[in-house]
Length: 241
Image 1 (spheres, one colour):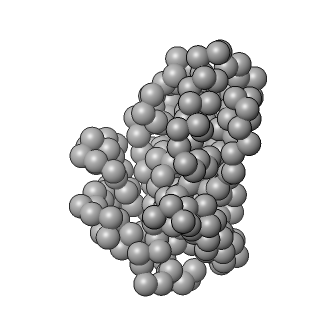
Image 2 (cartoon, one colour):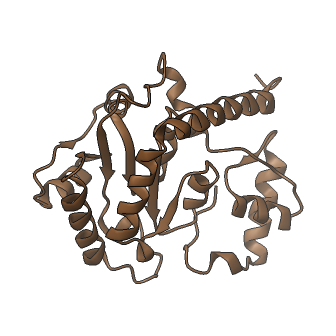
């Protein structure tokens, strides 16, 4: 997958060292796949036509015996990271503005939905608690606990890209907000994405309500994509083990 600054990625120009690196990866690996359109473009510029398959996090939910029914969840899960992601990528991300957006979003959505934070680590838990919203803050201690919590969700608003993909793999849609081209792997799954600088309480609230309204059809689409993704990875690696 790719990880470049979001702003300007459509016109990204790679130097000879970047292309040599991509070429080397393709040559030394027996099998290579990419999870987003930019990665595929990079390999193509390096002389390799690489198959694009959704991120393997989409199939993590196969460890569950069954996907939750679309009407069973009532939580709207939020994952919040300071500044909207791991890094700023010199894009002058306004971390305080993003904090204010999350606060406003929780205030609006909690009037109509049961909102909760889902955290990846203690830092995220501390950040969520420091917001002082009063909504529950969860830090799962294992992948099983993570998915158990996710089964109670109807939709999500996530800063962590892999939260969108993995929870999408059990049929729950979300909107992902970030600062870099890892957003493209979420887009590849047909889920909505936003650059942090362009994410507002208005457009995220509207997106969340749309996802909730269409969660039944989204569940079926995502589960079908999960099975297709699994089958394509099995086909890719068949014979290597």
